[in-house]
Length: 273
Length: 116
Image 1 (tube, rainbow over the protein chains, first blue to last red):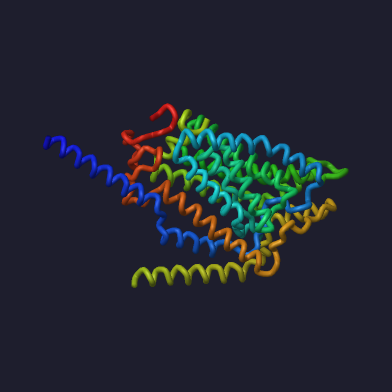
Image 2: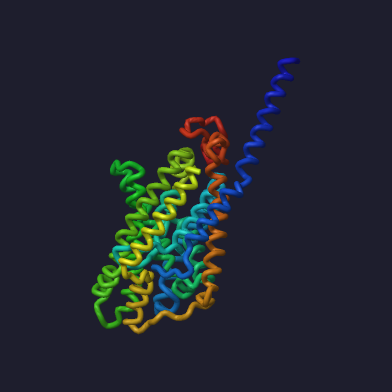
């Protein structure tokens, strides 16, 4: 009887400790959040110009075509969200965190002294290696839609093209590079660096292609593509390297703080397919 | 006091660096959409149109960017706290994630399919 009571007390104490711990996790630290928000307020400038293709630049057939290209990826991502949220309980918070990160990163212009211009990283390489490329397309689409609607950044007619360049190209190139680098035996941090860097460059390469294909008129599309890509180079080459370091840093941080997260995200049946 | 002096020193260093850097460098700091995208679009006869909701008027865009930054920061911070509890609570289970900094403790629930 005494043993039974002892066991009951231990179980009650354990249950109480677990409840307390879960409460501590779910209640956000307001001081930390306030600090983060203040930093962001200071970091975000009044006027932002970057890679997004502005309203009206693409002729209607081209704008429509890029929407058609983007839609299947968007549908794939939404299906992926439903399936993986059922499989992995922490998945939605991870998607929320990545969504906020991509939104903020993609509207934060960084001055590049070598070119005297500003441009923004994309964050899609980082998101792709953590939550997978289809879902990265979804969060990128939401970020781009909000920016087009409220921040005079990009456009609604050019949203499809922007989703394809930043969401589809950035995410799939980043993810592909990461997987290939890992298969070749590269350490995860190096693979993450390459994923971040090449996803950034891929985004701008595809933007160049979108512009050249729609605007080359009677001239050579290849020549226009080369000219636009070359104009992007002085800004994007260094910025891609910065994005690589940011991606590698994010990977290293998660690996050191919550290795279980990465294990869950990357294992075949619980994580990415 | 030591911390205050260190922070003040860093701010001074940053301000001096920025002052000297911006004085000696004559870049316009325009975005690549202006220097690349819109430049090529104008050359091709497709200049950018005004956005459907044009918030780029006076300080309105500044307001929207501040709101977007604040909301994005709070959302990111909220989920960050949920996924990465403070170090003191490192053993606190995150739903579905093996606990422990080394990820070795598999005794907690991992509810992913096929691994419960």
